[in-house]
Image (tube, rainbow, N blue to C red; front, side, top):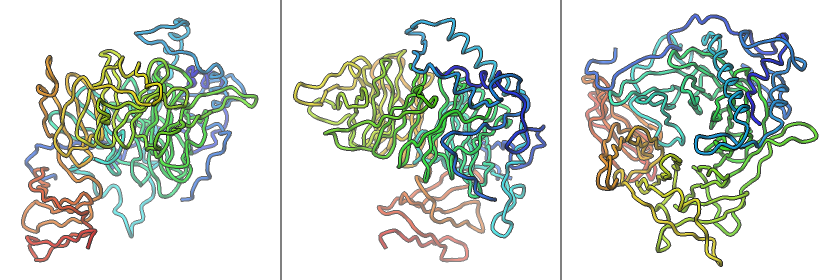
Length: 548
């Protein structure tokens, strides 16, 4: 089982010379690595060499000095962590179902908590990881700092997370942005690797934040920060070649899984408190969108993405503990990209599709294709969001048709296809149209409301009624509006605090950057490719489009 790999590795480690850069030292700080705050409503103007690809049998990596201890098998934290997981597949205990071993489970939870406490006893100097700037092409990091971010990343999947009850965290370009609701106050954590932020994950306790980066100079790192002080506590190295695409903590919080992007697509399991790679394998040969640990079975996790879903288990073999992945077989069902999935308590997995149907997987095979009555798909278009609440016994789905639909958990879980068909029909119990034209790309549910990230460039809050129908009682508020996709051109006025932008979403927008607000939007049917001013005052502009 995934026992506390961090505790096992620490207990088994002998002091050895570190094979990686020097251990942590007290942080000296730097202007661009400290969090910066701004308020959306404010009216005043805003003042190397590449690393080799990881091997199949990962070497031990150095942990910070505060995490080392004596004893163990040769001082190898990765080996100790793997040996602590040889009985994978044990059922996790939950509040709704407890199956044996409560004393063992309690001991593992306590050990994980002790390991997390140790993580707070050490701190890195973030400045030692900042990449050297090419002064001919880039401004030094201490010359400029982020004053405000006017957009969220509308196209990235799994990119909004609660880190407090009224604060979310999201990756935008080369920054991690903390956004407090409803004041819309922003706080920023800049990239250290000189590229962009590939993925973020919030620890189950919300006391730690994992930030996986993209680097142009070497293998990128995963940085573990404590929250809310945002001090750098751990650095995970050599998990992928160029960039990360997805991150996930396990339920207990002592393990972190990451997936790299092109060209290696490596799935790596970390004992993050000891900075050790425990297991890894190639996740797939194409993009992986989503990565999740099983909330019910230790040693199990699932990945999905372009044209696939894959079910992983940690298995003990003659050569040691390995990650074994079973590709889901579509059979007679049309192959589909899978953006979202949720696992049922019995191990079945419900996944999304591009065409709006939902797929129920059992043992690597499709048990049922779920549609609405009259052969209608669950959504008219791609499904990008699935959430499961066992407490309320409902499943939420969100898609490119702008709807969030609510499904009865028992009906979905027990749906059976006909004798001569793989189709099963279930109707939602309720639904909410966020707004016409919305593409539900991200969804958070907490304290009587939803937060919806719109793939067409907006961010909504949906207040839910205490009783009655959601479709008639939900109150939808647009919190932000912005470009969806790349900004292809920008000009500023010499006489006013405004900027005009043109984007790949076909929109031309005027922002008042002093007020930090969007003033005007014009939409066109084709992606913009160019924006230039035609007069000295930039009151007239020309926009070029993809279709010529």
